[in-house]
Amino acid sequence: MSTLRQQIATVLQVLRLPTARLHFHTRIDPEQIARTYRYFTKPHPRYKLIRNKTLGAALLDLRQFDQSASYLSHILARHGGAYHAKRARARGYVFAEIERNDHVEAIHAINTSVEMRQGRPMDQNYQEKCLHFDRLDNFRYYGILNPQGLLVAYANLGNYGNFAAFSQLIGLRNNDGIMHLLVIEIVSRLIEDGAVQFLMYDTFFGAQPGLQAFKRMLGFQPYRAHYSLQ
Image (tube, rainbow, N blue to C red; front, side):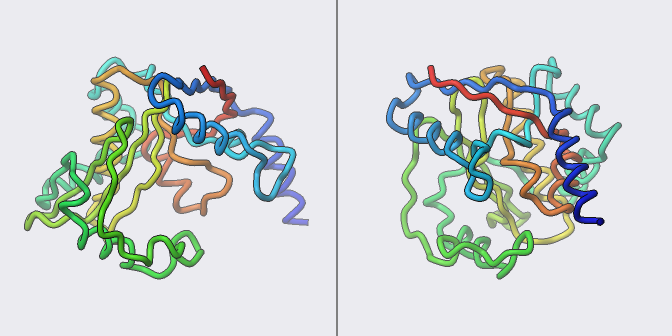
């Protein structure tokens, strides 16, 4: 009965989801943008009648913030994410835009630092050491450096049109607030740049409760996403 109740609760939650219209702009990179659009809108691997990243997309509507200070106030008052980021700064961690090829060893160490994440074994791609990273024009690469200058967390952020999305967001597992700092600094940059309306952090319904709580702490909410290719 508990499983049935959970399924009913999930259906009711889906029906109440707000809608976000996310536009892929082919002028950014025709081939890559079209390929990503097909991936986002292909049938879900488990629920064939649902598109891949349509129901429960974890989005932050950046339009509600006129400046980064407004966002910080929002998550400080409602979620506490700003507190954890402040703690990371106090411990000497620094946010930076990075060239991944300068951090090959550190990225491999991060990727292989734990065997399980979100209750699942790490994908084989993370176990294999990448010796050279290509840089895509519509991507930005960010990281958190510890007081000794070692990369301890990184994020690959793609710009697809009126929204940006994380393709990778991963760090060493500690309690210093480094992941909060990484996300908050990226959000603050996007708000100040004003180039995109939404930031996507994958989906809610496929995430474990801890990751869902982390997303909410940073202001992300589940949406029903409608995609277009322009």
